[in-house]
Image (cartoon, rainbow, N blue to C red; front, side, top):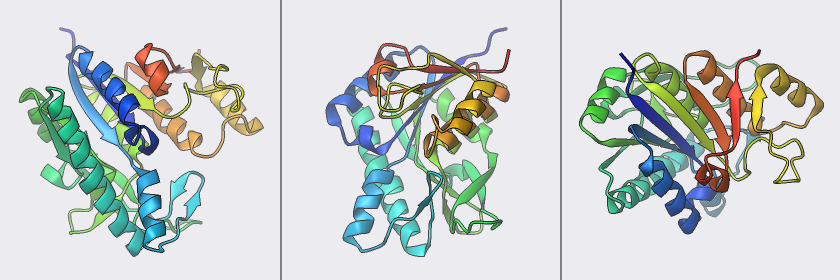
Length: 260
């Protein structure tokens, strides 16, 4: 018996702020056959609010360091402003969306990242996904919209990378769904020349990824995105694609694959 289809789309802050591109991407996403989950970040908007409130942004290897003041900002922006705007937009497009953080329905349980060499503050590393709750939402024909906030079940909210959330949902739900994941960013996908939008790498396996990372072709925020994508493929996702708004609309991008 074949598994039901599930499409998981992760979108970032710059796409969210481009009203026309966002509408096109969401429209294309809603046309896909099967269940759907939307995951979003919003780091750009959080950084802008941080500047207004004079809370400096600190990043290491593409990841945000989250002190108490930064945590309050990302909760307000991710779980509030951006999440509810996306839910309202999807409702206007005929989709019965429901906005969620990891605390809602105990959907995504995490722990505060253990300090090794870098103290990331209130960053959350995921421990468990409540697949029963999420499947119930999908069965009820709703579209879950997850922001990049999780919790530890002791009252502490945590800032968790949105790519990690998308990849973890892909892994957790792959046992019961045919999962197709799309990580949508600004570029058309993974590029052989970061300055040339037409230098798309259509297929990328893990060994080639490691080589491109070592030589510096792949760097910064693209590294955790691809780390998450390859882990999702390794744990059972049928397809993982790194794409941009334009390439997503063309059903193109960089398709990740296992070695060999």
